[in-house]
View (cartoon, rainbow, N blue to C red):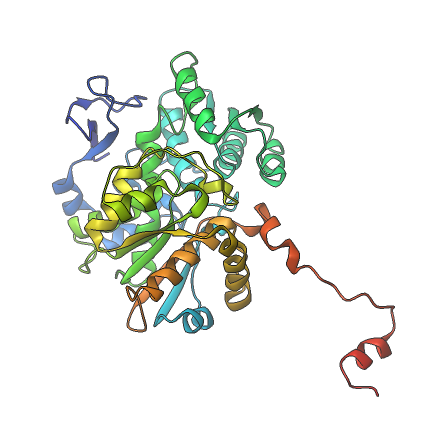
Length: 406
């Protein structure tokens, strides 16, 4: 395994590859360290193509060993063209990365698979998380597939669709009276007391690396090339930042020649600390979420500053999308591409439309928009579109309405 250690992003202190959430010297975040020279010698397009059609085809670029029996393996989700939507919004070429095709219908299956693999290496028998919904689904399903315990901590007022889609797998759900940030603080405290693998706390260094596989797949599915831009939602900031890192690393080991795409991110206006920080060129200031996009409702994003820096480094941007536009964008995605994405997709599409309006992207650009979750999890913003025409079981009534019969 080319990963050799964990290193603090702030002070560079190194640690063994254990379940360590933050640096004990400065409390900074920890990132895996890889032997890049070894990877450049041993990883090729051919070795990847010979692997399984899941994230585990990229196992040498991940900080854990691929499971001997990769149960419910996520990844290698479809990358589909959306020419009608591209024409509607004004970009030359638009591709949709459909992580709705994962087992629990979101990209979280990727990150949980990597974290759970590390949990099993360490002999942990329960995995846990704080979640705005999608992660709870993924943790519960992963635990069921692996035959271990699952505990999830969610805001008590979370969408019932997401709670049911967690309970069905047999996980223990703790409905916390508070925001996601309250859930996050609680799980940080509990991670010091319980022998559980908290995937987005003590196992976060491994968990976050799973998001790189989105970039790996996009590049491979485009014929080992990179698009001009990638658009993704921002909650904690990890997915967005790791997509950029994924493209950086493919260049580093010689798998692609194209430069890293420009990264454009979206946040709903009611919880947009990263968009605000990007616009002001300041550090992220925590906010109290008040947004319809519950999966993005993280007021104190762990990787918020890193996300803003990623936007600047790649020549992209982070935009706040009006709350009233989220449902409309979900509808536009469905009407023009046949894809029902959750509220996060409505936010991402809003960010793409803003980039076009600002002149940042246009008809000369090839763009990939990451659809991170399924709209069946968050149908409420588009419920008003349900307006059926009541008729009797009488063909003449239909024909009359259509003007065929007079």
